[in-house]
Length: 492
Ligand SMILES: Cc1cc2nc3c(=O)[nH]c(=O)nc-3n(C[C@H](O)[C@H](O)[C@H](O)COP(=O)(O)O)c2cc1C
Ligand SMILES: [Mn+2]
Image 1 (cartoon, rainbow, N blue to C red):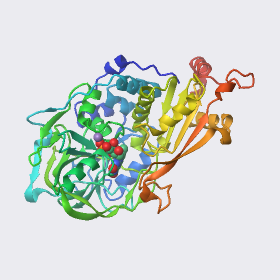
Image 2 (image 1 turned 45 degrees about the vertical axis):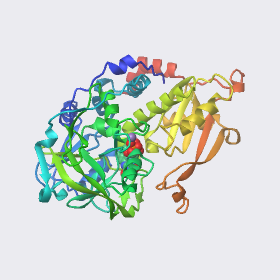
Image 3 (image 1 turned 90 degrees about the vertical axis):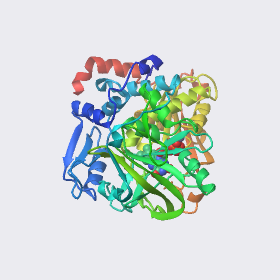
Image 4 (image 1 turned 30 degrees about the horizontal axis):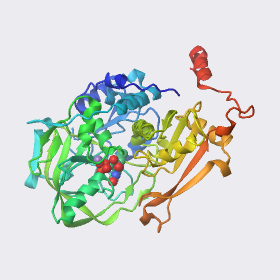
């Protein structure tokens, strides 16, 4: 699959929305919004979201009239489950939201990327309602129980947790799940190596409370910036999002912490992680498709203010069996990032990169190369397995020849099965970065937070490239494309 990346193409686009509400209008205009009334936050919203996340081309869901909650207090889920809705987020024409176009967008944008610093504005719609003191009651918000065995209501699943590095002043934003503990406290389950985890610990080690803002409803681009891996430590996700949007993100200042809060967000909780307060957290249905136990003693955010717009929307992106919504949109962003990182590490001849949604964003990366020298495929495999975009739990890297469509798992399996010889082409790398919640590791091994990784070289061995027995592929992208153009109507 050929992708021509030009920074101009990416820059030519500008999102046509300013906030989640305008984004929803654009989604409605292409017929991809379903409003669902009467679904319960205890069971139905989670079940319907799961059903839609597992169906290709399913609509964006907006839940209203949620039993037990004020009419107009809404929950949205499955936001960027289709390419067309991703295109709206990025300012591309939804009618042209092909695989190639989305990859082309990220490739072009990241190649010449310039962040645009966020700006502080005096006021924003997020201040339409500010709840203080006794009025702080998280029970007013229809946070769902997303999976039947979850330990409670998770208000933050597509959340943007904002903290400021006390040493540098840089603002960081990350998506970490937030369970409601009681009327004025939530969890913040951040893995220690994540930037937000490092910054939080800096405060707590000094015995100081860590100021935090948890945004639980905002536009999809801020959520995307907050949850993608590969934005370097020290670069604010808001400045990164401004660079993608082509305009600065507007922020107001929180009353209690002074932290910036997106002015057009829907709901934000402001408070502190307190050094010596703990609460049981979880279980929660996690991204690999299994419940994880949670934590007996986890940290607590004491909420001092709730800011919300009139008729606010909680943005939901629950985890679950892949592929789920974030897998569908991060496939493009993550693939673009890994491709960029391969190029910047000096790997030539890369013609395709794909992080398949089936791998839950992380578990698999496929790279296609036009081989240029002996050892080229192994170089691509090793770097693709370890660069910033894939360091988190990429269990399997497959390198294929340039004519294999990396975005088509049938094609990738064909390459593996037809071209690779296990003794020659499979390699295991041990003791690489893992996770405490890796379902593939045994109970005792998980605490080590390490895993092994497999690379499969499914390219034609370099030394045989010009051999008459090397094999000429019958299906080439050129022939397939030409046939589809002329005769594709037969399939429709
Ligand atoms: C939908 C979704 C939910 C996530 N939930 C968590 C979470 O609960 N805890 C966590 O540490 N990381 C979670 N992540 C991963 C982080 O958001 C991601 O690693 C991010 O880059 C962290 O940003 P930071 O390094 O700036 O802190 C989640 C990612 C996604 C896409
Ligand atoms: Mn960060």
